[in-house]
Length: 402
Ligand code: ADP
Image 1: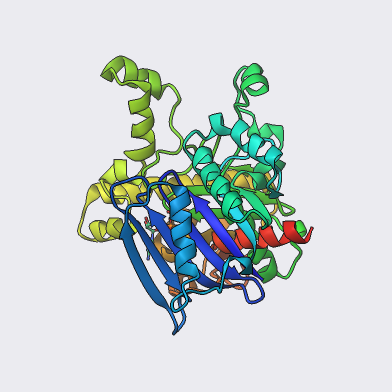
Image 2: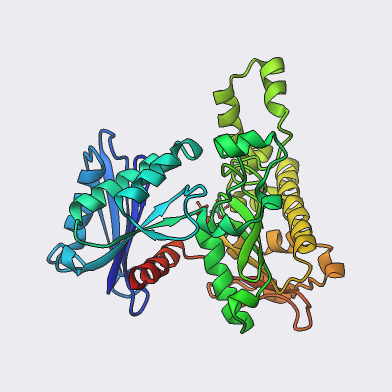
């Protein structure tokens, strides 16, 4: 059984073809610069195997439909492709950013589901329309194939009101749906499941803190397998310090910037989303560059690292308080999986709460999921690579099999 996983952006389509029996990736690729003068498709067949081969096509790709047709042409190419024809695809999974309160789980796409995704456009004005483009095109091309929407927000729909309500006039929630939704749900759910396996317990009995540190960063408190709090909010801006996003700031900042610097709301939004976070603090948003700069004596880079890891530590402490008992803390995504310094700093001083990191294990580099706490640590610490496409594919399998 082969699944086609699609993550459609405003000018891009990221995709994978996954063989579900072995959960192996047959092809992965990215179409970008859709609608620009010259578009680009990069496709890799059998990635990470001796048969790996890469191809790049550059040509005008006016819209998502032509982008998808180009992907299909590459995937079904007689010499270089990975499938004979499109009938080999037995289901399609679409990543959808915002499901609002309409979706608590992944769901088979129907006209009603499409309407509900549209209904949530005000909550994700950049992402949902782009996700809908991908759905529309795939429904047109693969009319007979079951298609499933997998939402970034769905895993967090189990949060109770005390965690998702902002202390604002309640009409803003009741009429305008202003509340915390949380994102990266597919990733948090995936690493939580893997962690439960490593703990040898059903997920429904595990209390975990999952820490996703990539370009975007978020943390989730998971009680008995269910998300009960998460750091990203109504939009993916709240909480931790990210690559270019500020995370928590005083909401009165908007007024200050307007009154003192004459900035318009759009400029403030761009500042908080694109010019802040690690980049705002030290001019760099790749953690590898920041470490090099710290070694070279760059004080701003050292401060950026300190601000980020302090914020992580503060949230871990808060979520430990919320959960009471914690079986495991899981680090994942680009920084979480690779950066021993960030992990150690984020857990510094938490020994009194039962978190005892094994410094040597933490420093070891590996691609596999692993435990990095001392044998007798009451709270175990894990590094677990996230795999959003595989997570989406497993969701699709669940929905399709009913
Ligand atoms: P995204 O949120 O875009 O999916 P990723 O999860 O791929 O991001 O994480 C990207 C970030 O991970 C990079 O910006 C970089 O800061 C960090 N990163 C990647 N590799 C390493 C590494 N070896 N050491 C430290 N940080 C790394």
